[in-house]
Amino acid sequence: MVLVKEFRIRNNCTVDEYRIAQLFSVAKMSLNETGDGEGVEVIKNEPYDNEHGKGQYTYKIYHLASRVPAIVRMVAPKGALELHEEAWNGYPSCKTVTTSPWMKENFKMITETMHLPDRGETENALNAGPDVLEQREVVYLDVADDSEQASSSYKVSEDPKMYKSKKTGRGPLAAGTWADTCDPVMTCYKMVTVEFKWWGMQTAVEALIISYTRKAMHLMHRQLFCDTDEWYGMTIEQLRALEDETAKTLLEKRHKTLENKTDFS
Image 1 (spheres, helix red, strand yellow):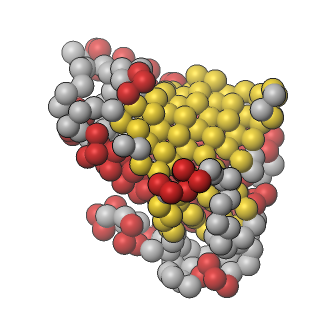
Image 2 (cartoon, helix red, strand yellow):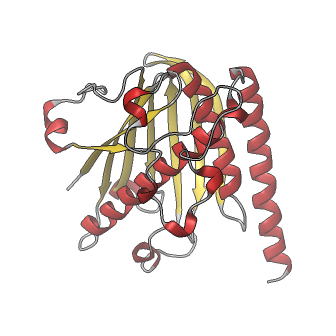
């Protein structure tokens, strides 16, 4: 069985602005998620130009021993819980492939993304074939809807219903209605395909992966809007410099925590 979900996430910004906003948010979240020897390790971040187009290629390793579902930790050998992510960002379209060196061909998650200046009404933004459309379930994520996140993780500073941008005047966003009337507006169409081949666990783990992905996407886009005054006005050159600095900081944070663990082992 393969799960196919298409998430549609509307944002109070333009398509051009979102390019910067997304990259800024990914860098910020990577810093927040890295520590104790876990988190994000950036292996490559470089331009590509080939027969498939041109854009930015990234290769990252996610060290997630304590963050994967407990059902997987129970059976996975020590040191096997890392995910490798390759991404081809040919904005406005992007493709990300996530794999596990330990599971090899038995696990793969593919995320295909298209960014359009609309309100989420494009029926087949990713030009999926009839067989994929037959399996696809469309899910709209409202960044102003608190119910997508656990109440224990709620932060006023990350609530679009409470935030107003000083630089743009955008916000606060009213849950359920803002995306129908706001200007500017754009939509991220993200088709996520998950395949986890493990007898007896496949359905449960695929559902868990989709659930985690949904929450992560929703949280990132809530933070993205509430960080408007941080990324608004940045150039792509400034963003690339920030990514380079972030990669160095991530490496230093992981090495420092690993060294500390070794010293006290």
